[in-house]
Length: 267
Image (tube, rainbow, N blue to C red; front, side):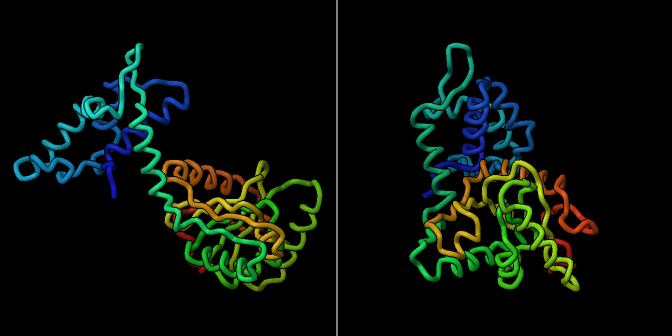
């Protein structure tokens, strides 16, 4: 059951994000964000059942813009600090945490057991449902790349540019495979500072993967595919896109940067 409206959720997330960055938002700043921060699409007449039959949309938006901080403090989801800022109450934190938990429903979490012979096919199936996604896997190997190319629509893959260990050998194998392909259906780029495994789906959602695909395919360890909460996914999506655009192609002739939809030639 959804407790928070989109506007309430956004307001609590804004206060929480600012607090994590060391700043306490003032009530007027929260109301300004609602009014001027492009939040009009979050205001719905059905959020005001007592007035839905009599208010116009503009009246609902005007009330929200000038009263959001007062409303959230009145419900004791926010409270005022000594410095005049806003902070989440224990109730507000619990509601936001519960709402984010709903966003990443446990039914979407996929446990891939090393003792399960279909763990790797299950992972490929999950990836195939993510559309023309971007895979961040620092230690991706050529065999897994071939599987992704054959069984999924993942078309962009970001690997590490590290010169340590077996990384150069893995990249050389991938480069050789791509060079031999008549028309490569995937793009692979390398970037510094790539340590974690993530998938940016075509629709903007982001998942984390506990281990590299090669560990799953070889059934070396248990791992979990976990969806990120919406706010975290938004930030990581931007991070992945920026990394991709600045990354170095393994095939020097490769062109094109990341976009919400993959290019037609990668289909």
